[in-house]
Length: 350
Image 1 (spheres, rainbow, N blue to C red):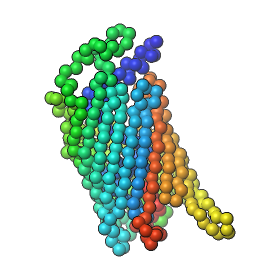
Image 2: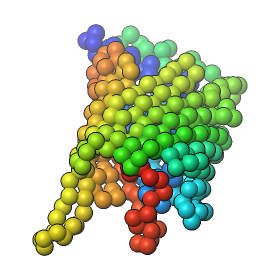
Image 3: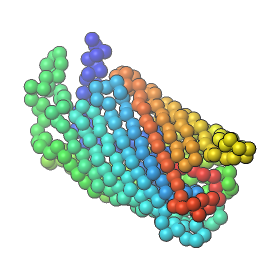
Image 4: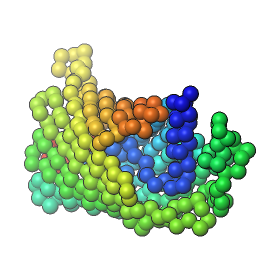
């Protein structure tokens, strides 16, 4: 009985906290490498041997609580105004996000437009800078929330007054601005390294459900470092580090993906039908969760699934052992005439 009560109280506190802060923590994905523009606007259309990219992600978190958290994203970015020598180009991207959290259906809906410019400064270096503008709305259903004054000693009773005043706004909206910069190094066709920093909420938009509220989103810096290293004819490593700060909170994730290449042959000798890679990965979100990933890449299509095993005390107390996440990325060229051409002398990366 006590364990059940603790679970109810903790779950209720999560919902109340979400309502009070109105999104103090931004949405995030464990497969951050599959949400490039969310990490850093300078990632827009930064591709080694393709012209455009389409992607989607779906995440569900803490399935043991009454209302699991769900996050969805879809995006597209493409290269434009590419020079004849492909050493510089403009990246244009659009993205859509939807995040639903907790009993009160705290919902964030957001659309972004992102621009980035990529300049190759030498045979082995490239600098990228990006700017992002987005419009977001948040809604909440207060009738589905439980407050401390509604506890009758046995359960939460919604017929009791909540004790909350000035809660007349159930929808808030704001314009959001972000920016970022990347430095890429590709010494050969076997290695690629990128270091970048992005800044979200540069304009510090106001976000609150209270009429007299002054809650502002703080500037959120995100540092990301990732690499692609071809080990031999079969195996490729993709190590990465992600670090983000959001007012008093921070998130550190690090780990690697391993790709094992295979080729499908046709019925005729020497006929080549396509090539792909099996993908496996392990990442660690510091003091929070262990993330295992598997996936398949076939030609220009990548499909991935990952699972977070919660290791934090909160996750263990409410038996919310983690969440599933799925990612889909497709990359391509504008026409057959451009296939085989490369923007950078480095291995393919996403």
